[in-house]
Image (tube, rainbow, N blue to C red; front, side, top):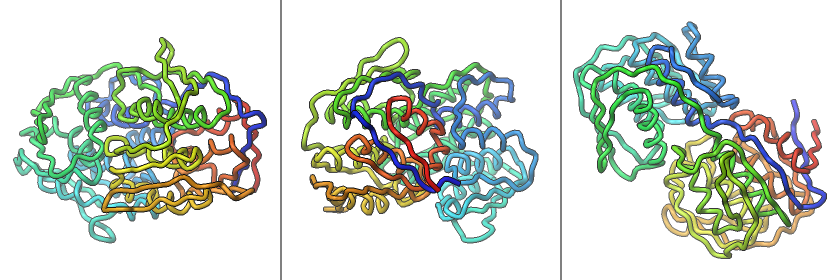
Length: 409
């Protein structure tokens, strides 16, 4: 297994056209809904990301013990899918996955009639899922400030419930665009749903098989925005993105307009061109938490003063992403400090290390967020294979635009 790679770029000038991987967020939702619609749908451009390939395999598997590995959507979506379809399964994952909470989702499913037991620590996987016997309950109140994936998991199975589901979201809604994406996909497959204020109403109904083409991944696009911003000169085309996207991470367009990248939409996707960068910015990542690492690493490298809010869900991702960022930006001569509850600030620093090495914490986004810094000086990325989770071709795509990638054991 490759333990690290070293990245550098001889010229700092970037030009090229990149075919991005498909969105695993869209693909994984489409896979669950297509299964609930009877399995006759035609899904095109499914993501090559490990999370999506894994979900495809598990949905076809008759195994009684199911390993969701390190995939949060797979764990949460399958918990609801197996529970409401009455499949007897033991659902487990990696050591880190079994440390990520699932109590909010399990409590809600139990109220609806699911049989779910914890096999180890209360509130965490692994889970023993049994028969489903509807309680006839229609209305649920669910915390919405932890993870939108719990809500999406409940919504996708809601049409199968005898009474449908009225879901009241309690508290600040985390990652709202992902909930909207789920509802849009449900409607694409023939299920009506209404989202007003903090309440979502889904009637009892049947999904209809449909044809669906998965869009390219805006989260993956964010790393190319960072590359363009850090390059001496750049013009990059990213294929397969749409202006009217279901994906919340399309917010990167507006964010990067302030951080040095202009976006033009074309028939094929988008064109990125380097422009002036602001030196003092503030962003709320409540709707797009997966962009936070990219922006922190970029601002630390550009010498931009950055204020961040909306990071609550980062504590329960593949790693504690806030803590990981706080450790890794130290190498860039700066610090990420919580100046008041939920508000973080990072001031410009000076990169004073000749040999920059970044740990990835078993987190694909840590690897890709810090990789573009190689445009400024060579960097070492530890455990680079983590990118297989969402963007398996990332290192090869970097080579296509002139990065030198040297692997070592």
